[in-house]
Amino acid sequence: MASGGWCSRVDSRWLTAYGPLVRAQVRSQAQYRASFVIDVAGSVLFGVLDVVAVFVLFRVSKTLAGFTFADVFLMTALANCAFAIADLLVGNVERLRVYVRSGLLDAVLVRPLGVLTQLAVMDVAARRVGRVVVAVGVLIVAAVNAGLALTAARLVLLVVAPAAGAVIFSAVFVGTASVAFWWIESGELGNALTYGGHDFTAYPMPIYGTVFRRLLAYGLGFAFVAYYPALALLDRRDPLGAPAGLGYASPLVAALVAAAAGLCWRRGVRHYRSTGS
Amino acid sequence: MTVIEARALRKEFVVRVKAGVLRRESRVIAAVDGIDLTVSRGDMLGYIGPNGAGKSTTLKMLTGVLYPSSGVVRVCGFEPVPQRQALARRIGVVFGHRSQLWWDLPLRDSFALLRHIYAVPAADHAARLSRCRKLLDLDPFLDTPVRQLSLGQRMRGELTAALLHGPEVLFLDEPTIGLDLVSKQAVRSFLAGIGDAGDTTLVLTTHDLADIERLCRRLVVIDRGRIVHDGSLDELHARYGSRRRVVVDLDAPLVTPLALPDVSVESIEADGRRITYALEGGRTTAGELVRRLAELASIRDISVLEPAIEDVVARLYADRDRHGAGA
Image 1: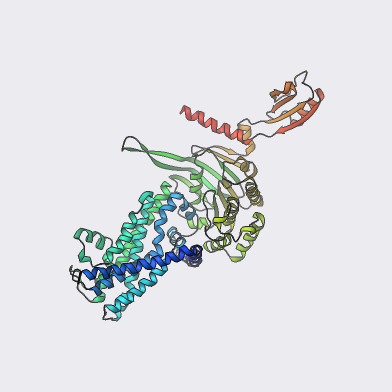
Image 2: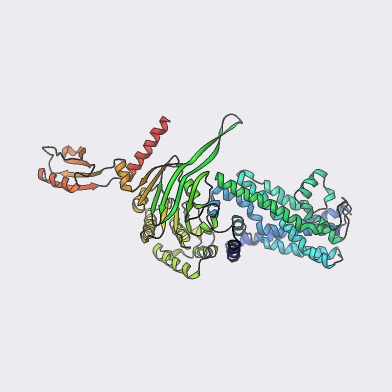
């Protein structure tokens, strides 16, 4: 990392290695054809069910913390889209604990690519593409349904928000997976924050209790996945009194959360190398 | 040219020991306790020792997997951990129990992927692959998914995978473990060929003594994190008093015992018709012993037993246990 030349050489190798590795992974998974089809169908179904939950909710109540069905539908769609992208890209880093336990991480460490890159690429789950496609479709429907007054800024936000949200979720995936460097038996702990976090972000923040909200919405930046961007898109004020247009800060929050996760990861790798686990 | 250099290399682990119902005491254990090692280009180094002696830990520090707790280490001029990726392109690593291959893909695909990972020029890759295909006889299973390969086939694949980027040093952690005899021999003669070519340095850990005899010109024996022997196999034999033996079958028992310098009678069987002589030191050769014996009796059969490395290593480890009991 001493010189820029070194960095750029690594980047180009990363790019040339990335494509073949992802294709190989898809080929691997396609070997088990029935299982592959079931997985794709399952992940599509999951994406649809998340939306159905909103429909069910609004059969019971006309509004949720002052928000209409169309508002919440948009939030859910944004959260879903962000999560589906993150899950596709790095959802499998939770397998880190398997790597640590089996000693396969040693094999990863003797290859000339970054550890995180290898884990993300080598376990990329092709079936999750289906969920991303569904999520993007649902987001378009939700945006149309909400009748957004689309200015240029909002159009950009509509594209940037899911990307920033995906970075936030990715950071949570990576951060929670890092725990396995210290504690192999971390089990389902990570899922509470990743899959649980996805459900949390799908609804307006005022419905949550103060402590819970402070911790997840602001502490981990979950409010910036869907809630604040949705408010900005809908041109609505935050009932909790946050300044208008806070949704546009999502990429900044994403960068901060990603930096924190990166730090956890690096410390984790360093810890592994000093303990061997 | 030096390819591996270690000075006072040390690795400590903290282990927690149960000290009560809930209490745990931390204890620091040195898995590698001050190792000095210099390996030159083309060396074939056997790194042996009992389980838990620190072999794998050393190997992990040399390959950039683990940070040393203290000491200096350079491999191909790199500091292994900080310069892990640069070093990775110059070394090959084969773990006997862990696969580096893509489980669900044909062997051929794994090789193709490794070319991208290591950014090997297509021509070099093809040349190295075709050499391995010929020497390791890979063609019959090149299109079989790795998960369906036998262990012997897979190991041949692993070796190829570790060599496709033309490493300067090849680290092998128990490369013949679990293989059948034929596969073991295939692996050994392949590695011997690489060693004989002289530009690749081999460092291997093994419990298989045949590996050592066939492949290691130099033996480093490690015990409790320290090097207890560094030298050739012959030196190890000399130091631990291994002896060549000459077994003779005679038509009739000897009337007068044979007395020669450095020769002792180890056993007499079959009513004196089978005698086992042990040769120690160099003052009498096996040929001379046989010639003198032929003057005294009529010899029916002769066999010369080379010293078994098993005996030497067993003695080495037994020493350790004695010390262990004393400590």
